[in-house]
Image (tube, rainbow, N blue to C red; front, side):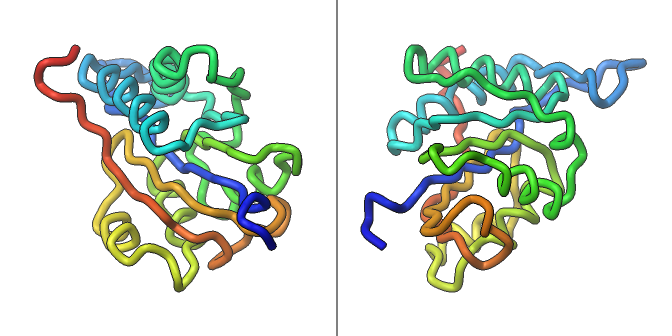
Length: 179
């Protein structure tokens, strides 16, 4: 398979959320730091050439707000996100099942979700030839706004485990001068 046939997959944990009293988990908003993290994640995607053709986003408010801030940075490059109720509180198998239904015309996919399923899915996908430092950082934890970028050499429908190369893991944090 030639290099141009390799697709990109980025799994992202939503940015930092607030914990307002009396608000259901699904309806928790981002806190101010989370908004800054999400915007920084958008800048990181641009810097590293991980701009998605398609975004699948959990229906939880904090994930939707993460997507909005991220897309505001991507500007005209941002695709319209598709909300996926099934990504909320999803385990790794459910996340992969959602990815398995992505059309093959999509060359670059961003999935915004939650712990622990998102981290478990990332670790499950990583091939033995994945970037060692990226795998170790991911295994050590998946903080808010973390981005795990993969090269996918086959069809979306075939992703199941140990079949995507983790090439980058980063945790975007805004500099103290940005708001």
